[in-house]
Amino acid sequence: MAGALMLLLSAAAIAAPAVPLERKTVSLALANELASAAIASCRATGREAVVAVVDRGGNLVALQRGDDVGPHNTLAAQRKAFTALSTKTSTSTLADRAASDPTSRNLVTVPELLLLRGGQPLSVAGDVIGAIGVAGAGGAPNDDRCASEANSKVLPASKPRS
Image (tube, rainbow, N blue to C red):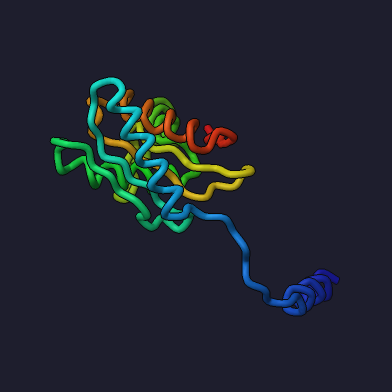
């Protein structure tokens, strides 16, 4: 009986028509607007930063670098954005979990992930369409604030998952 049910379910899956998926993602215009808003947020407190915005596939769409920001921050911003996208979670939440939860601590061993504050997923209508990462603004809390303010300003209905 179970075999017949599996065969029936398999046949139903094969019979479904193959159609292209339609998904929202970050455009170049949106990425630049987010990056500019994050740079402006940092500058409002006298800080410079690097901002990276990735699309839903983790591809870098926009990168803006403030004046005199250390070169290591370019990669850090991109990795924060990738981490937020990949996990659909803010990097501040991930950092807190890694510090307090032994089962989450292993995330620090994944080389592509960077568990420092400053990365946030970008959501539209509940779907993660990309992410923003900020680095070099004088510490993780500043990075996180600049990313959060840009996200709230440009995508006001967006609420990153915790």
